[in-house]
Length: 185
Image (cartoon, rainbow, N blue to C red; front, side):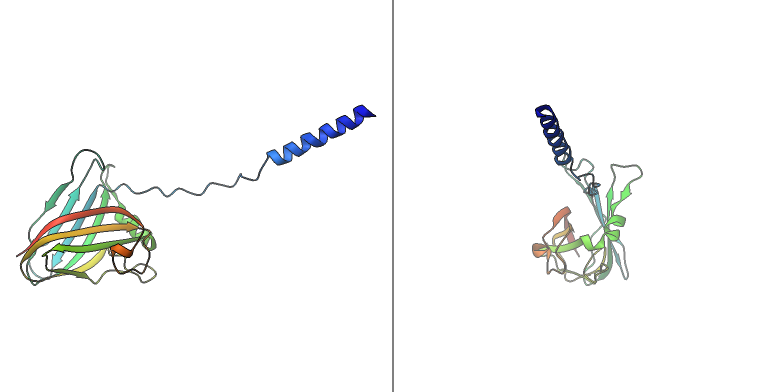
């Protein structure tokens, strides 16, 4: 009878270990939304009359030792309205991946910001909106004022708090931030 009790107790203990040792963690892991690799940012400004101006920053090694290469096709004209657009690319791939398409697709999770610095007499407004009616900013309007020089910083924020009043209160993470030296003449 003692052997029978020990066998029953051993069977109960082993069964308990089997049931407590197995858990229901076979759920599929949450998909990982990897951060985009952005090597290139181009702002295209098309005036109502005159020449189109492009501002491009290209940093093919990312956080590597090489500095970004800037290409500014010309100066902005004073007292002019421009229709603007911004494109971000991953040029580490061939052909280059247009990250802007993903930004538009995930519009609730992204926002572009444009900030003038120094004495630059420029206003950016008229942004396109995300699907909730908040600013996305892949397209916009730029109005220049008097001849001046300064900086024009373009920032793409991932998962900003929307609505917001500026990049300072948007929160989120910076996907890319580029500062261009700009002249209005």
